[in-house]
Amino acid sequence: MKLPMPDQPSPTLHTLFVLLGANLGDPRQTFADARQQLTEQVGDIQQASALYETAAWGVTDQPTYLNQVLRLGTLLPPYAVLERTQAIEQALGRVRLERWGARLIDIDLLFYDDQVVQTPTLTLPHPLLHERRFTLAPLADIAPNWLHPVLGRTVAKLLADCTDVSDVRKC
Image (cartoon, rainbow, N blue to C red; front, side):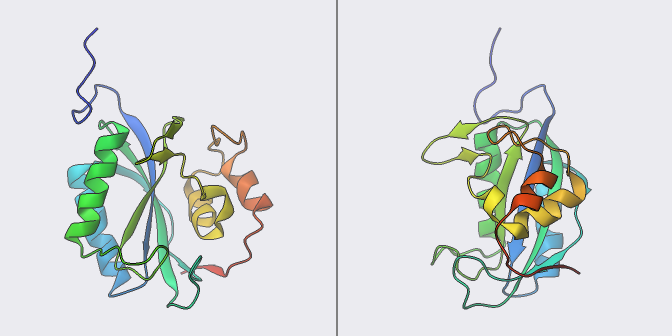
């Protein structure tokens, strides 16, 4: 059997969850632009959570964020998804100056099927997903029963057990 090249589509439709985040510029418009580019370059959006206004996490002295989780169907392998989402971020004005700092757009890969990947450039599932209420709340909107392949708990259970007390409000 011939395997597809790493940057080539596979014949299998994969389930991908991504988190959009922004706290600079016009996040609603940026999200609309990101959703369009994700559809054109990564795959069809199958579900979208509500928008959430959330407190900054990590570096807290910055404006509040807008967050949304999307479920996509993609034919791309994980590394191609990462490459394309980073290119979308850059096209939308993302500049990486400070870890967890203010930004025009952030597109985090949360889950890719039930795959577990740990490399210097990509970790799946997202390594901090279970510690972040701003990620778990919108993810629970669309996938409460999705099972974390490493922790063995559903998204709903991860949210219920999350010790993060940051303010997260549905818009």
